[in-house]
Length: 172
Ligand SMILES: [Zn+2]
Image 1 (cartoon, rainbow, N blue to C red):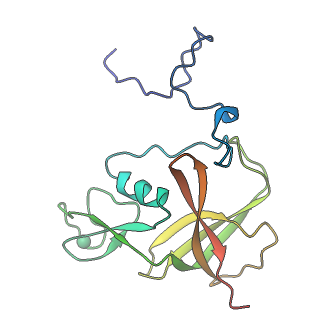
Image 2 (image 1 turned 180 degrees about the horizontal axis):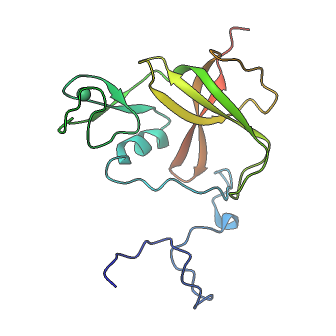
């Protein structure tokens, strides 16, 4: 076998006494962090700056060095100008946007999610069609319509790991 072993794979069950690196036991989390059993992001080379910023509660989006357009998530080609050498750099965005669509999740197939919760598809203010999907933290009864303004929020799910989410921006 030549494939590198993923560090957190649960495939090896032959030695139950040795759990080595798998950070799956929420009971050992520090008391300051919100205990969670939610799956955690696994950054790769392309997405590492995004997740590092999110961990600092900043939203940074990849921007093409050729045409200046934002792209999320960044691919190896800029979808706006077609450059195969987009030289993406991550730049801060304001975190405001509007709801394009949403769904109420009533059955979770992953651990660590309290149902029901709302998942919103948000178009960020910086650019048309620049979308980010996340949980809406206002609860399942939040008044939503297409175009509802929201602002980014961050859920701390583990030490130095956060997930972007949204809250109603509301003008009340
Ligand atoms: Zn481009």
